[in-house]
Image: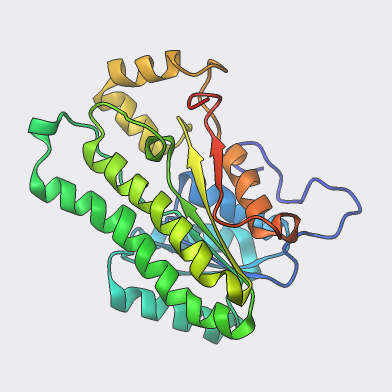
Length: 262
Protein backbone atom coordinates (compact mmCIF):
# COMPACT_ATOMS: atom_id res chain seq x y z
CA UNK A 1 0.00 0.00 0.00
CA UNK A 2 1.13 3.57 -0.63
CA UNK A 3 1.37 6.02 2.27
CA UNK A 4 -2.10 7.33 1.42
CA UNK A 5 -3.58 3.84 1.43
CA UNK A 6 -4.00 3.32 -2.33
CA UNK A 7 -2.90 -0.05 -3.66
CA UNK A 8 -0.59 -0.25 -6.68
CA UNK A 9 -3.42 -1.22 -8.97
CA UNK A 10 -5.93 0.73 -10.98
CA UNK A 11 -8.82 -0.16 -8.67
CA UNK A 12 -10.95 -0.78 -11.77
CA UNK A 13 -11.37 -4.55 -11.92
CA UNK A 14 -11.27 -5.86 -15.47
CA UNK A 15 -10.73 -2.40 -16.97
CA UNK A 16 -7.91 -1.56 -19.34
CA UNK A 17 -5.34 0.67 -17.60
CA UNK A 18 -6.03 4.22 -18.70
CA UNK A 19 -2.39 5.12 -19.36
CA UNK A 20 -1.20 1.85 -20.92
CA UNK A 21 1.66 2.55 -23.34
CA UNK A 22 2.01 6.18 -22.25
CA UNK A 23 5.24 7.80 -21.05
CA UNK A 24 5.09 10.41 -18.29
CA UNK A 25 7.59 12.82 -16.77
CA UNK A 26 6.74 13.73 -13.18
CA UNK A 27 8.66 16.54 -11.50
CA UNK A 28 8.82 16.94 -7.74
CA UNK A 29 8.34 13.17 -7.56
CA UNK A 30 10.19 12.47 -4.33
CA UNK A 31 7.18 13.11 -2.12
CA UNK A 32 3.70 14.51 -1.68
CA UNK A 33 1.48 15.02 -4.72
CA UNK A 34 4.28 14.12 -7.14
CA UNK A 35 5.01 10.76 -5.54
CA UNK A 36 1.37 9.78 -5.19
CA UNK A 37 0.60 10.79 -8.78
CA UNK A 38 3.57 8.77 -9.99
CA UNK A 39 2.13 5.75 -8.18
CA UNK A 40 -1.27 6.29 -9.80
CA UNK A 41 0.27 6.78 -13.25
CA UNK A 42 2.22 3.53 -12.84
CA UNK A 43 -0.90 1.71 -11.64
CA UNK A 44 -2.65 2.88 -14.79
CA UNK A 45 0.10 1.46 -17.02
CA UNK A 46 2.40 4.43 -17.67
CA UNK A 47 6.17 4.28 -17.95
CA UNK A 48 7.79 7.03 -15.90
CA UNK A 49 10.74 9.36 -15.60
CA UNK A 50 10.68 10.68 -12.05
CA UNK A 51 12.64 13.84 -11.31
CA UNK A 52 13.34 15.88 -8.21
CA UNK A 53 15.96 18.14 -6.71
CA UNK A 54 16.13 15.33 -4.16
CA UNK A 55 17.58 12.81 -6.59
CA UNK A 56 17.84 10.06 -4.00
CA UNK A 57 14.15 10.44 -3.13
CA UNK A 58 13.16 10.12 -6.77
CA UNK A 59 15.44 7.11 -7.14
CA UNK A 60 13.85 5.46 -4.11
CA UNK A 61 10.36 5.84 -5.58
CA UNK A 62 11.54 4.51 -8.95
CA UNK A 63 12.82 1.43 -7.14
CA UNK A 64 9.45 1.03 -5.43
CA UNK A 65 7.61 1.20 -8.77
CA UNK A 66 9.92 -1.24 -10.54
CA UNK A 67 10.78 -1.55 -14.20
CA UNK A 68 8.27 1.01 -15.43
CA UNK A 69 10.12 3.86 -13.69
CA UNK A 70 13.51 5.53 -13.92
CA UNK A 71 14.71 8.65 -12.10
CA UNK A 72 16.97 11.65 -12.51
CA UNK A 73 18.07 14.54 -10.27
CA UNK A 74 16.55 17.75 -11.60
CA UNK A 75 16.61 21.46 -10.89
CA UNK A 76 13.47 22.59 -12.72
CA UNK A 77 14.77 26.16 -12.93
CA UNK A 78 17.74 24.94 -15.03
CA UNK A 79 17.37 24.96 -18.81
CA UNK A 80 20.19 22.44 -19.24
CA UNK A 81 18.63 20.11 -16.67
CA UNK A 82 15.38 20.13 -18.65
CA UNK A 83 17.27 19.30 -21.83
CA UNK A 84 18.86 16.35 -20.06
CA UNK A 85 15.52 15.13 -18.67
CA UNK A 86 13.82 15.17 -22.07
CA UNK A 87 16.81 13.45 -23.70
CA UNK A 88 16.72 10.75 -21.01
CA UNK A 89 12.99 10.17 -21.44
CA UNK A 90 13.29 9.86 -25.20
CA UNK A 91 16.33 7.60 -24.95
CA UNK A 92 14.65 5.30 -22.42
CA UNK A 93 11.08 5.30 -23.67
CA UNK A 94 11.07 6.76 -27.19
CA UNK A 95 8.30 9.30 -26.60
CA UNK A 96 6.77 11.70 -24.08
CA UNK A 97 2.99 11.64 -23.66
CA UNK A 98 2.47 13.33 -20.29
CA UNK A 99 4.24 16.02 -18.30
CA UNK A 100 3.21 16.67 -14.71
CA UNK A 101 4.82 20.02 -13.86
CA UNK A 102 4.55 19.51 -10.11
CA UNK A 103 7.83 20.65 -8.53
CA UNK A 104 7.35 23.68 -6.33
CA UNK A 105 8.35 25.57 -3.22
CA UNK A 106 6.15 27.37 -0.69
CA UNK A 107 6.65 30.64 1.13
CA UNK A 108 4.29 32.34 3.58
CA UNK A 109 5.41 35.75 4.82
CA UNK A 110 4.07 39.30 5.09
CA UNK A 111 5.01 41.59 2.22
CA UNK A 112 7.61 43.51 4.25
CA UNK A 113 9.26 40.25 5.32
CA UNK A 114 9.45 38.85 1.77
CA UNK A 115 12.91 39.54 0.43
CA UNK A 116 13.62 40.03 -3.26
CA UNK A 117 15.80 36.93 -3.10
CA UNK A 118 12.92 34.90 -1.67
CA UNK A 119 10.49 36.22 -4.27
CA UNK A 120 12.83 35.41 -7.14
CA UNK A 121 13.52 31.91 -5.85
CA UNK A 122 9.81 31.07 -5.59
CA UNK A 123 9.19 32.43 -9.09
CA UNK A 124 12.20 30.55 -10.48
CA UNK A 125 11.01 27.17 -9.25
CA UNK A 126 7.24 27.53 -9.48
CA UNK A 127 6.84 29.63 -12.63
CA UNK A 128 10.08 29.50 -14.61
CA UNK A 129 10.28 25.75 -13.98
CA UNK A 130 6.81 25.26 -15.50
CA UNK A 131 7.70 27.46 -18.49
CA UNK A 132 10.90 25.52 -19.13
CA UNK A 133 9.11 22.20 -18.77
CA UNK A 134 6.42 23.04 -21.31
CA UNK A 135 8.99 24.38 -23.73
CA UNK A 136 11.24 21.35 -23.33
CA UNK A 137 8.63 18.63 -23.93
CA UNK A 138 6.61 20.37 -26.63
CA UNK A 139 8.84 19.48 -29.62
CA UNK A 140 8.44 15.74 -28.98
CA UNK A 141 4.70 16.12 -28.41
CA UNK A 142 4.31 18.25 -31.55
CA UNK A 143 6.13 15.62 -33.58
CA UNK A 144 3.81 12.86 -32.35
CA UNK A 145 0.79 15.22 -32.53
CA UNK A 146 -0.41 14.27 -29.08
CA UNK A 147 0.31 14.95 -25.43
CA UNK A 148 -1.05 16.14 -22.11
CA UNK A 149 0.69 18.77 -20.01
CA UNK A 150 -0.61 19.15 -16.45
CA UNK A 151 0.63 22.18 -14.54
CA UNK A 152 0.18 22.16 -10.79
CA UNK A 153 -0.96 25.60 -9.70
CA UNK A 154 -2.86 26.14 -6.45
CA UNK A 155 -6.02 27.57 -4.96
CA UNK A 156 -3.70 30.52 -4.33
CA UNK A 157 -3.68 30.98 -8.11
CA UNK A 158 -7.44 31.61 -8.10
CA UNK A 159 -7.84 34.39 -5.55
CA UNK A 160 -6.13 36.59 -3.02
CA UNK A 161 -4.34 34.97 -0.08
CA UNK A 162 -2.73 37.14 2.61
CA UNK A 163 0.98 36.50 3.28
CA UNK A 164 1.42 34.56 0.01
CA UNK A 165 2.70 37.32 -2.28
CA UNK A 166 5.51 35.30 -3.88
CA UNK A 167 3.69 31.98 -3.88
CA UNK A 168 0.45 33.40 -5.27
CA UNK A 169 2.32 35.36 -7.94
CA UNK A 170 3.99 32.16 -9.11
CA UNK A 171 0.77 30.16 -9.12
CA UNK A 172 -1.19 32.87 -10.97
CA UNK A 173 1.64 32.79 -13.52
CA UNK A 174 1.18 29.02 -13.91
CA UNK A 175 -2.54 29.51 -14.43
CA UNK A 176 -1.98 32.18 -17.07
CA UNK A 177 0.71 30.28 -18.95
CA UNK A 178 -1.50 27.20 -19.01
CA UNK A 179 -4.25 29.07 -20.84
CA UNK A 180 -1.87 30.66 -23.35
CA UNK A 181 -0.04 27.44 -24.18
CA UNK A 182 -3.30 25.44 -24.33
CA UNK A 183 -4.36 27.61 -27.27
CA UNK A 184 -0.89 27.61 -28.81
CA UNK A 185 -0.47 23.83 -28.78
CA UNK A 186 -4.08 22.77 -29.43
CA UNK A 187 -3.55 22.58 -33.24
CA UNK A 188 -0.95 19.86 -32.57
CA UNK A 189 -3.29 17.71 -30.47
CA UNK A 190 -1.60 18.70 -27.21
CA UNK A 191 -3.77 19.50 -24.20
CA UNK A 192 -2.60 21.79 -21.39
CA UNK A 193 -4.52 22.08 -18.11
CA UNK A 194 -3.88 23.26 -14.57
CA UNK A 195 -4.58 21.61 -11.24
CA UNK A 196 -5.46 23.82 -8.27
CA UNK A 197 -5.07 21.97 -4.96
CA UNK A 198 -6.09 23.61 -1.72
CA UNK A 199 -4.80 22.46 1.64
CA UNK A 200 -3.35 18.98 1.01
CA UNK A 201 -1.74 16.67 3.56
CA UNK A 202 1.87 16.62 2.30
CA UNK A 203 5.28 16.94 3.95
CA UNK A 204 5.59 20.51 2.64
CA UNK A 205 2.32 21.49 4.28
CA UNK A 206 3.30 19.66 7.47
CA UNK A 207 6.47 21.76 7.65
CA UNK A 208 4.42 24.90 7.08
CA UNK A 209 2.00 23.90 9.85
CA UNK A 210 4.98 23.75 12.20
CA UNK A 211 6.15 27.22 11.16
CA UNK A 212 2.78 29.02 11.09
CA UNK A 213 0.21 26.84 12.87
CA UNK A 214 -2.22 29.72 13.43
CA UNK A 215 -2.31 30.60 9.74
CA UNK A 216 -2.84 27.00 8.67
CA UNK A 217 -5.58 26.41 11.25
CA UNK A 218 -7.36 29.52 10.03
CA UNK A 219 -7.16 28.22 6.47
CA UNK A 220 -8.59 24.83 7.49
CA UNK A 221 -11.51 26.49 9.26
CA UNK A 222 -12.34 28.15 5.96
CA UNK A 223 -12.65 24.86 4.06
CA UNK A 224 -16.35 23.97 3.56
CA UNK A 225 -15.59 20.23 3.76
CA UNK A 226 -13.76 20.92 7.05
CA UNK A 227 -10.72 18.79 6.34
CA UNK A 228 -7.40 18.80 4.53
CA UNK A 229 -7.32 16.90 1.25
CA UNK A 230 -5.06 13.96 0.44
CA UNK A 231 -2.37 13.61 -2.19
CA UNK A 232 -4.32 10.67 -3.60
CA UNK A 233 -7.31 12.93 -4.28
CA UNK A 234 -5.10 15.23 -6.35
CA UNK A 235 -3.48 12.24 -8.08
CA UNK A 236 -6.86 10.93 -9.25
CA UNK A 237 -7.54 14.32 -10.85
CA UNK A 238 -4.15 14.21 -12.57
CA UNK A 239 -4.90 10.76 -14.00
CA UNK A 240 -8.14 12.12 -15.47
CA UNK A 241 -6.29 14.98 -17.19
CA UNK A 242 -3.58 12.62 -18.43
CA UNK A 243 -5.88 10.03 -20.00
CA UNK A 244 -8.25 10.01 -22.95
CA UNK A 245 -11.28 10.54 -20.72
CA UNK A 246 -10.39 14.24 -20.84
CA UNK A 247 -9.72 14.33 -24.59
CA UNK A 248 -11.85 17.46 -25.05
CA UNK A 249 -10.47 19.28 -22.01
CA UNK A 250 -7.76 21.88 -22.50
CA UNK A 251 -7.03 25.28 -20.99
CA UNK A 252 -9.09 24.30 -17.96
CA UNK A 253 -8.65 24.65 -14.22
CA UNK A 254 -9.42 21.56 -12.15
CA UNK A 255 -9.84 22.64 -8.53
CA UNK A 256 -9.35 20.18 -5.64
CA UNK A 257 -9.85 22.36 -2.58
CA UNK A 258 -12.81 21.06 -0.56
CA UNK A 259 -14.92 23.98 -1.69
CA UNK A 260 -12.58 26.74 -0.49
CA UNK A 261 -12.78 28.76 -3.70
CA UNK A 262 -16.50 28.14 -4.35
